[in-house]
Amino acid sequence: MRKMMYKELAKKIPDRIRSERLIIESDPIDNAQPVGSNFHMQLLFDIYAEFLFPWQKEDLDLGCSRCLNRIRNCFAEMKPHLIELEKQNKLLNGVQS
Image (cartoon, rainbow, N blue to C red; front, side, top):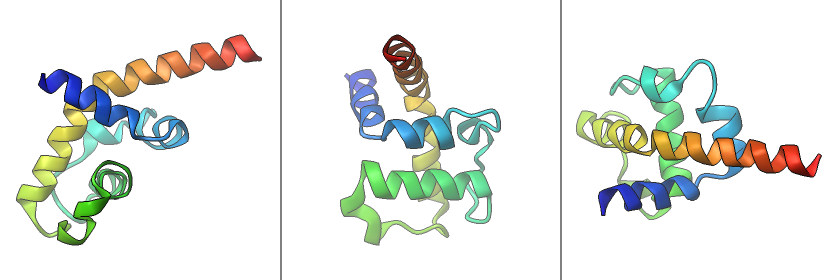
């Protein structure tokens, strides 16, 4: 059940954001630390608030380590699904070229 939830959440992130900001060499998902000053964490925080749970945007706080841990864990759970979506997107774009 949880696996399906993370798969559905991963689909909410636009292809461009996934390709250009998440599934990249610097690997912000693996390199995020639950500290508000961490660049990778700030990126995950912004994507989480904008695309995954925009109705919680006002309640999220970069200074809340529990919030940041929840966000980081959410992205860690989504990562295999994000990678799979990226592979599918590349295949689709390769076929259309």
